[in-house]
Length: 417
Image (cartoon, one colour):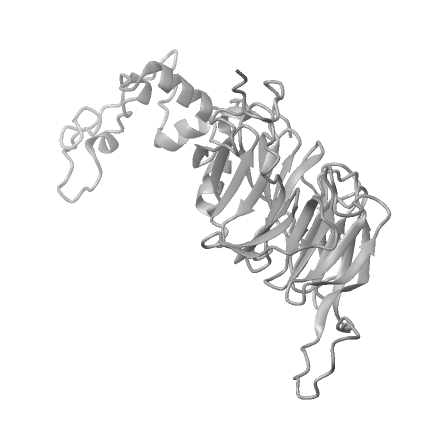
């Protein structure tokens, strides 16, 4: 008897993509049978349209409860992979379509723009008021009906930005800023979108290898990046392009699946094909303390020990000690007077005694942990030991995969950048 679970039951649709709406109160999924919209709070279905052509939708993005955009793909696509359709859920009809004559790899939507990511370039569209669709001829006009509000849809191409080969459709769209891969692998271009701000494009070098994931913070001030190695995550300030933090996800290479900031820029979340979710602390105190190099041992010894007066070198032929009259007491032979009650220092400071060296104190910790701590504090310690790690982590799995699933494989070792 064959008891094996089928690879894909025929009555279960496959989820090909999922994304949140611009307001984050809805999320939309592209499946092998179409697309569906859900509420974020209770996951109830809010919209399940019947498209003109049945088939798979590989990319789906929602602007709000009314407008959405999608691209067909999959084994049985609902159209061409080069065609982007902008859909009105209220009217249940198509408002606009764009044919790029090559496969569309990604979409981004916000209240003012639509971004289309292709293999080596990205096109930005502006929303404009468009005429409502023409009603069918058999529907009579009613003069008492109130006019419908004007429709807004992407209609005019605003700019075209060339990029390095971008097979993962990397792009981060903010109302004031656009982050894209630059022409050189590992670099990112920051493009301001508001006319009141500077229109000059800025380019920063994020990694030595090709990029795998990037994300902008909710307020657009921070940018997080990850390379194809997946071992290091870097955070940059979008105004100054300075690196403000660097975190180590792990030692083995991994495929970074997603990056996301918390609403207040306190935490950075990262998921990978290792089946682990990491949380990194972005507080300035924590990142600056972890990023500051430890002082050298000589500097620590100078900071701990007070300044000592070194005794003069002895002479080979010391001169005879001078004699003083009997009426005048000698200050050399008599011991120093005891400290007065008003003296606030210790006896060691008063008599110029050396403090007990720290090396003379017997260790109270485990020798192995003490050696590792000393190695981390050494200025010659490997970078892999001094990198900042995640503040918390937990395992996760997707679908019917077990808790120890490993999606990407990858050889061990390597400290990629």
